[in-house]
Image (cartoon, rainbow, N blue to C red):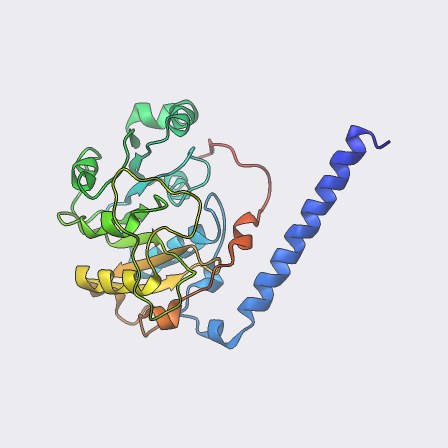
Length: 274
């Protein structure tokens, strides 16, 4: 019989081996000719608090275009420890989280009590829909051209972004459904009461989002290697800073969801450093 300490050690070794394999897979991907263009964002991927490499890509985008207010809004930040804006908050940004899950809301209120108290973080406990999206943003006292909007609500993302009309964030990060290849325009049927059933019936294809972005004055500038999130920049800010053409055909990444289990360092906790 193995003792508990030995079982734990074996489990850790297996986890380390898994992470090593993922690291090798990423390194092999980035050696491909597609990723040699330095304007492409994937070489900048880095996970601090994001699901995969979003933190590094977001940081690189703002290095290239600059910031206006260092303000963000994120729909569905989860329990606060894995999302696209916590890293920005540690860098001095302020903003709004909109979260409908009561369990996650309780965790956020406990973990980020100081930020909620001093006003550097606002929290709205409500589900985001196409009907209420603008009113929810208003509760964050955000400027019209705030810097970053992150949308990852696992189902109606396309329809919610479509209804952001009064605000024009400089950058939009939005989940896409990577099972649909470039050229396929597909969007889930809208139902404000529906919740994701953990199947492939969610969101929108990258081509559908590319076209929506163009309608709203945004260019598609990249996607994560994991095939989870797409990044859009307001067209007047793009210039020659990113990898053209700004199409799904150029920036599509297939579903490599195994990369979302990639870890770095210790188990995450709310940052308290300066």
